[in-house]
Image 1 (cartoon, each protein chain N blue to C red):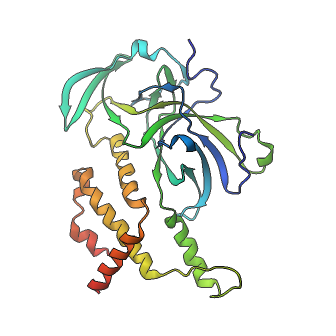
Image 2: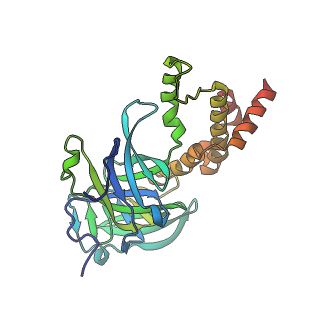
Length: 149
Length: 161
């Protein structure tokens, strides 16, 4: 009987990704500078959205994928990334060293108070979800979070 | 060359078109198996419901090489899908000889992961279910901030100053 794994040259990888809309299921891996590590990192751009790759791997593990055994028990999973996080370090750098006016080129000046408000929105959204995830995260009290603001 | 990918910064193409095969669920085993390839898994590996529930986690039971395993099934969150992807003809693309370019294609899909523990009863604190928390956290953290949210937050900050 024909199987999904017939004729596979190399071991497959197990990936959890956002289900794209039918018209846009061709994704690209883009090499972008990671905002924290500053290193080139692969991001999945699919269905008009940017995603980060995460890797779950335990010391021992393997997969049963239907009637197929896969030695590599790791799991790749993609999570959404707001592209502004990728752009911020680049904007910050360039804002400081560029002259204010250059003919024919449109410049955007970074507004620090807007960046702060934007980050506050992020914190606000995170505060909403942490208590729902389980008791381990509920230890982060309102005061601790607000202090950091 | 499967698709036009001469754009700078693109290092791989990933084709997540609906695959013909839906495996429904895949099994994560708590041991290494030094083998990649077809095997009669479904003939010998027969998970059963135990009827036991721990912290809302329904415990299943199966045996592998005479060892008892206890497992739990996680449904992928709404909007997510599991893909089994194959790396295709890497390195044959002449236009990208200087940099590596890969093509990945989905071969099969799934919506549930059953992970199996050997020594412990499955619980919500196991590493695999916990790694799915990141999907929820990332969605909250990375969904775009709307102009309205930003305006509301700015005015709140102005008031508190």
